[in-house]
Length: 345
Image 1 (cartoon, rainbow, N blue to C red):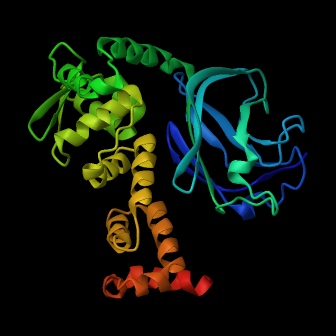
Image 2: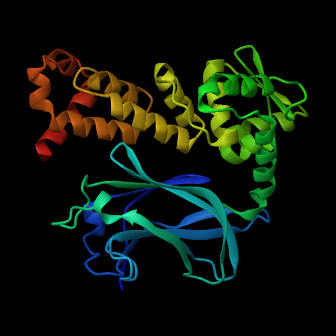
């Protein structure tokens, strides 16, 4: 068994994105060989830090389930630790595996592993070459220490206040949620979004987004329980609250740009991934340049990289579709990136 360190880790606590490609896993030639992420450090309630890493076994972890690859969380802590852990695996624009139980896992010692084998190799690997089918695999994970259990219980109790209905009655369910978050008896903090008041739980928002945590902390320092947000549509903010409270991602295609901007600004990884996937699922030669300009304007590096790759690969086809004028009018720095990409082909 050999373990190499590779890949890019994007940290937005408590969520993390680990990006792998074929060059990262080329050293994994045998069963039991793994690639490990850069270290992940999280804060605990006593002010100390815990250290973790993700491991990916592309050839199978133990030779028992040879049709499956494994993703595990590895403790880098000397003493016994506990943590909540869930993750999703994304290939191109598709979520191909999701483990979102948020289970509390106990790690008795350093280098102890926990994970599952439910990632079929046939989904992600080419059976002949043994390489990643799309030359890229993204693992989104969320790691939280046990003291968030109280917040999780509060979210579960709040969930019971919503009258859940069948799929046919989804509109009524949305109305029930929207009525709840404007009720004065709900929550302990008010956010006023372009004039509309939303009642929220400050600790829940703070745990899900460090930007919201800063907003709450700044106002609490002034003995205030209200803050203003003027750069977001109230309807977009309502969808964001659904994600924060229930992890219920509903992407409104008409609002996808606003949702993506908000998800990026407030570090909402699950919503960002859903919006990004929705955008990638709808792009084509006709709107590619528009999406590229959008990603560039708002500093969305990973999305822009994907779009540049698409344009460079499909450049001849786009010219045949009369897209030359829109490509020609790209900003000079964007055009330079496209030309760089084409030079590598």
